[in-house]
Amino acid sequence: MRARYGVPLGITAVGAAGLIYAAGIEPRSFRLRRVTVPVLPSGMRPLRVLQVSDIHMVGGQRGKQRWLRSLAGLRPDFVLNTGDNLSDPEGVPEVLDALGPLMEFPGAYVFGSNDYYGPRPRNPARYLLEKVQGRHGLNGNPPVVGAVHNPWEDLRDGFDAAGWHNLTNTRGTLKIEGVSVELTGLDDPHIKRDRYTEVAGGPSDTADFSMGVVHAPYLRVLDAYAADGYPLIVAGHTHGGQLCIPFYGALVTNCDLDTDRVKGLSTHTSGGRTSYLHVSAGCGANRYTPFRFACPPEATLLTLVGRDD
Image 1 (cartoon, rainbow, N blue to C red):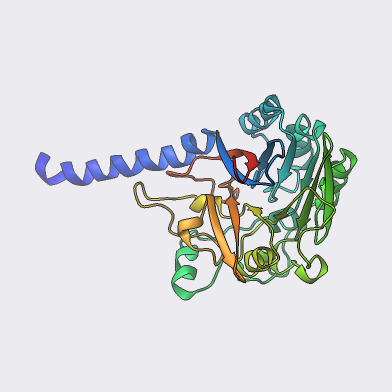
Image 2 (image 1 turned 135 degrees about the vertical axis):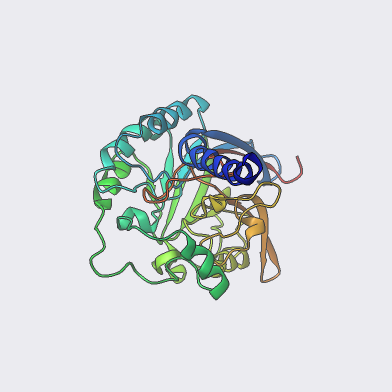
């Protein structure tokens, strides 16, 4: 009798433990990654950039809010928010409160599709099916008719009031102790709001350093940034694969980026030029799929140093 039922019960127990971990433990195991990127002109002082992404705030997530507030203790030179702050139409005040200490520093932001539209219940298995079919998440289409409108305008106004630069298909410049940092941003390619023609032309001759900022790292965007000569591109959106297989990695990226570059630092080449690419795994998840496995929530402190350092 024990032999007959022992194995199925054991498998069930392991599966239940994995589900509890993926739903209740790892999504709250916030991490800070530190990455050094050799992209600055020789002789320029290092710049410390804090990237936060894919917060997907839902009301009542106190632990996430405390952790985000604590990141101000890093005292970065500037902050980049690469979108998808919301997963709840009522979440704007909590996002602004959690990011309040970080908004004391210079910063800039782009939005993702979840800032504009509320999430809908969706079978997670569809992402795997879309990978097989060569489709990617929303596949470049706006959400369906009847999608919940998130109050992204209030989020924008809060960021703007703090002095953060809105990089929606435009450029912004930060002055960091006499250093001029140009940021070229795009609206979310995941729902075809990107307009690269409005910012094309490459880094400005007047900036000490330039970089590209976007929510979803679709290849058409990475190609454009790299071909135009940006030494660094930062993005989010992928959640690092969110549900990963230990010792193997991510199964999907929710865009047309390959899974080898689903998170962390890599490179991208286009038009004979190569850029560094950093993709954040983000610190949240869609409220209807609040799971993470082998892919802890994160923020990243990027230390930019000279190319010859």
